[in-house]
Amino acid sequence: MINTLIFVVSILSILVIALLIMVFAMARQIGILFERITPVGAMINDAGPKIGDASPVFNLVSLMGNEVVIGSKRPHSTLVFFLSPTCPICNKLLPAIKSVQSSEGRWLDVVLASDGEADKHIDFINKHGLADFPYVLSQPLGTAYRVSRLPFAVLLDADGVVRAKGLINSREQLDSLFNAADTGYGSIQDYVSQQSLMSDSFQPLTKRTVKP
Amino acid sequence: MELTALLSLGSVAGTTFLVLLLLGAMLHKLGDIERFYGFLANYQLLPEALVKVSAHLLILAEGLIMAMLLIPALNQLGAWMAIALLMLYATAITINLLRGNVHIECGCGGPAIHLSYGLLLRNLLIALVALPSAISSHTQLNFIDAGIGILCGVILCLVYTVAEQLIANFSHAQTLSQAKSFN
Image 1 (cartoon, rainbow over the protein chains, first blue to last red):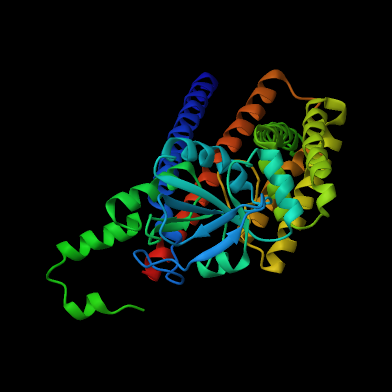
Image 2: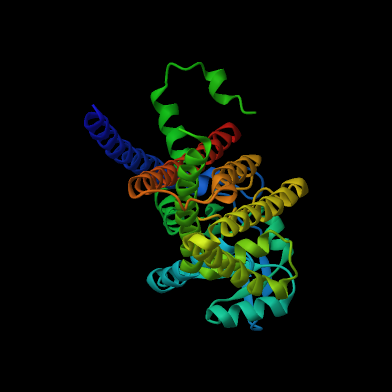
């Protein structure tokens, strides 16, 4: 009897552990799915310049003393990346930003933007080797794009039109900005809602056009 | 089965759980220490000059407590200190919750979780699991009992990992449904 009990308990323990590992694997996969389908668009706020609108024009001076123009006609597209020295995810994304600059440099200029006291930002630039990037401090710039949380990115095309924007939490989300610019859909949510609008042709028109 | 025997089994399970938890937390912090400085700075509890020092002290404390838990003579003291550390973290979280500063990441290790009252409940539950280790010693256990205690600790740790992941998923799902209602 006691042997049977020991046997049953051991088998059950192994089963519980195996099941827990499987549940964890599934939960993790769901988590990864969520991370992938909540890129850019998830945090798009309708305030600020809309996708397809012309960006306000800013003439700024970078911390290195160079002139930086955002929003006007330029030879390249511009990625304005809002960050702060104290934001952990910003630090995590710096290598991704550097690799984007080197791989997409043919058509894209990356501009780093923040606000606050200059000396902290200069320390930050030296510590992370960001001297190659134009780095601007401008509160009006952040206000114009309604940046409420960091890191936030805005992609402007060569004509100064906003092509994509949103909160960036991972390398994938950064890439999805470029996808958004390529496909013309601002976000995956945008894409899904456009698709469902097309397929739900039986839906009453009023229901479609009402927006909160 | 008498209460002391049960308590010692609980003590072994609790100790195993705490050691695994602290190990995970330490590795998470050491794996990207720059990120941990950022998390700690976001709590806005310390002057900036002290952030790095405190980050190192916290990691050291976690390591020290883990070592104490593994030494039988210091096990009980280690468990008390683990509870104290959990309460310290809970206090930091509470202050920021009261400030309304909920959009910062907890930095607890594991998946990204924003601050919420759920985290306080979680710390309380972990402290509860640690309690048997703090109030009883487990010197009179035989080999099989110890093995079963450790097994239970490992299972607890697995359950905890799953729960943590599910909480993170839940907050993702919430963000997604909020985003939908905006559009």
